Amino acid sequence: MLPKIYDTQPAIVELEAGDHWWCSCGLSGHQPMCDGEHTGTGMRSKKFTLTERKTVSLCNCKHTRTPPFCDGSHVSLPTARTEV
Image (cartoon, rainbow, N blue to C red):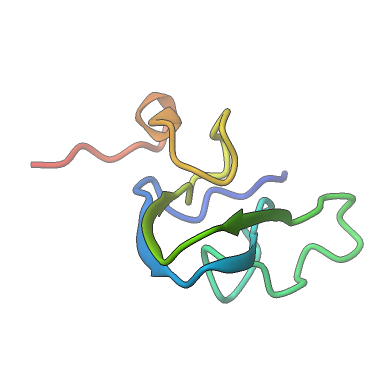
C-alpha cells in the first residue's frame, strides 16, 4: 500500500537553490529525493523550487499535508516512534 512510510522522522537537509524532486511514494533508494522507483505505481514525485540555498525539513513519512515539507503528521501515525 502506497505511500510507504520511509521513516517517522523528517529529513533535515541543506539544499542548493533550484529545482528538486521529493519522493512521495516512499520507495526511492535516495530518500527523501525521488529516483524514479514510483514508475508504474500511479504516484508522482513532487517538484519544489528553492530560490536560495536553504536547510529544509522534508517529510519522510509521506503523509504530510504540506508536501514536500514535514508538518508533523508522523506523530499521529500508528508506527510513530517517540523521541526520548
